[in-house]
Length: 361
Image (cartoon, rainbow, N blue to C red; front, side, top):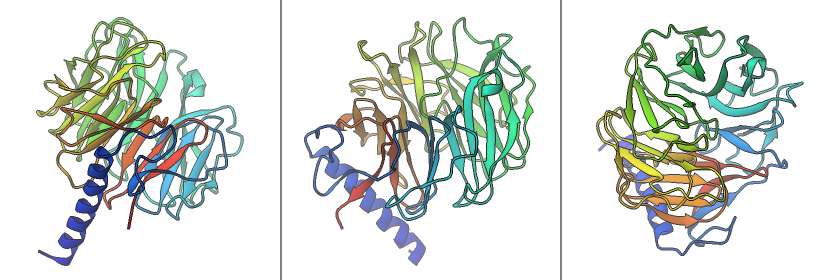
């Protein structure tokens, strides 16, 4: 085994060990880590914004985007955060951010008509350039994903009965609406959820998946050609109401995926809040033991094949069998979660909460 292979193996063992340590602990009170050895460690952000957009790059660098036009960046592993919000963006609601490194990132603002915008920075947030402003009052953009540093997509709720896909080939500097001829018809009342930046996710150079809710069934749509043509599949996650459906997706490769969701209303139960696919999203099976409540974000732990984390306003759940069974390991509130190739996991949510999965050295 090469030295690089050994390093990656050590990272994998360390992070999976941390996750397994979480399973041995009783759920903690809100905001507390469940053990002294491992758990979510809150970082000081100095803001009360709600961060539904999260883009960690590595152990030291991460970006977060949220309410009141707020964008934060850390380059020291979360010990400090710098406010790099775009000037004059206080009225925008950022719900997604995609970052390439410590200097380059793209953020998505949601809303009807011109409230939906895309901004890009190439200097660590010192300056921002608006690269897209939605001019169609019928469109409402929810989330975005990038296949690499150049190619990316953004998702709008249905326009004229079909989801609208925005595409970039230059890292977010310019965008174009893709033809809708390869998109299946949307169900009545169906839409995407701008809850965690995970209603549109990709794996590899061409595969992308789209999560839906609000219709008679909660569906996942898949494209193998960067959003040109799509197929739709029903999931077992309950829908049939504007507040129910699939809120977050994660694919660790083009075959293995996890879907989470439920009903985001606090007074409503969320049975069957998790589902698993082992064939690239062509079929979905319900989790045998799903998360106990609504979950909006999900992420595979890096380098492993079976461990993942799901988060929501009432807690964090861990699976070690690929999403088939889940156990709650923390009761703090988070909206989204993401992990980096070098072995760090981050979560963010309401009241300025951004945390790292900490391990005992």
